Image 1 (cartoon, rainbow, N blue to C red):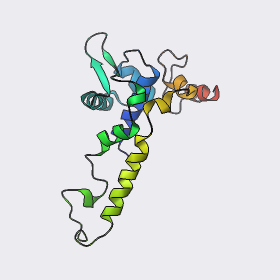
Image 2: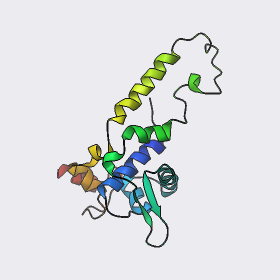
Image 3: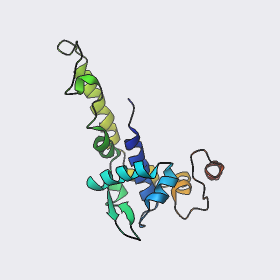
Length: 163
């Protein structure tokens, strides 16, 4: 199973918001911290806002923040939001052209496996990922002393080593 880039960015964005809880964060800061393009991140933030995960504020001092407590945001819920519209395999698609579709017995097993995957993530909350996680805090906190948060940058390595 492979998750989409949007799902990955959605979870990173929510972790960024959770680490900076109580602050309105800017897309620019989030993009820099999670190593994402601002254009791609804007689409993810828009969907997160539409689904009620974040609240956005327009204007000069605008940005976004968590719409509810990190302890109430299930990772499974986030993954379902971003992945459920995409079929896991062709036989789950309305456009299924597989010649085995009428006789293959694999579909119910795959359905159970996908649901088990989401169910396992339903038990994980955003707060579980960020609370008492000094390394993540050092990487994502806006007022953190490290300024270069690009993937693989020396500052990131130093922040992790300082745990």
